Image 1 (spheres, rainbow, N blue to C red):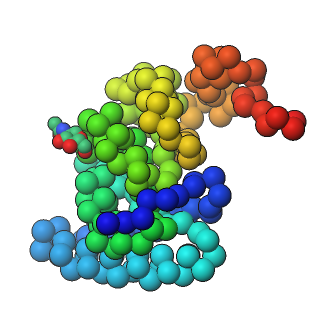
Image 2 (image 1 turned 90 degrees about the vertical axis):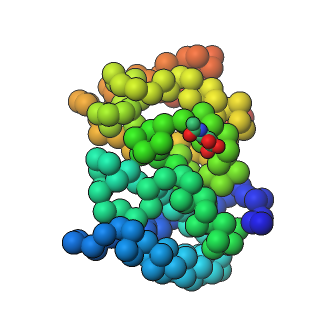
Length: 191
Ligand SMILES: *[C@@H]1O[C@H](CO)[C@@H](O)[C@H](O)[C@H]1NC(C)=O
């Protein structure tokens, strides 16, 4: 079993990518070999990163729309690989856009994999725009869920703004308001 002690706030995080199934090759024919290579590379990277107190992240990317040949596609596959790699400074980067497209079931997936998660990314589905743009995901609910689960890491905005980036942050202003925070968000006690 992996050690799960972790503080996202004290660490530098870096995304370690899985690579793609080669063109013209069946995924199933190379999956075993690709996984073995990925595991070996992750162990190497984890040991290098550990010397700098850094954390490596693996991110499942959807193969249905965005990247059909990407090797790492679901949180289950990522969790199984992290388990096999067995390094405490590797974590799951869960992009909810990809997770919704591949697997849905976001509440249960977040609950189940929370101990593995080092970074979360958000975008509405299917447009990949702001979280409050029209789409399948209910982000006010998801943000509450992350709070109730005790998630303390960052949430990255991995979306293409529909228009102006700053104007598109209305969802964040609404979130702050819902928490009784002033515009500009949380302040440290010393500020
Ligand atoms: C939902 O996700 C959980 C956690 O990954 C899993 O155990 C469960 O089987 C999933 N449910 C469905 C219907 O896929």
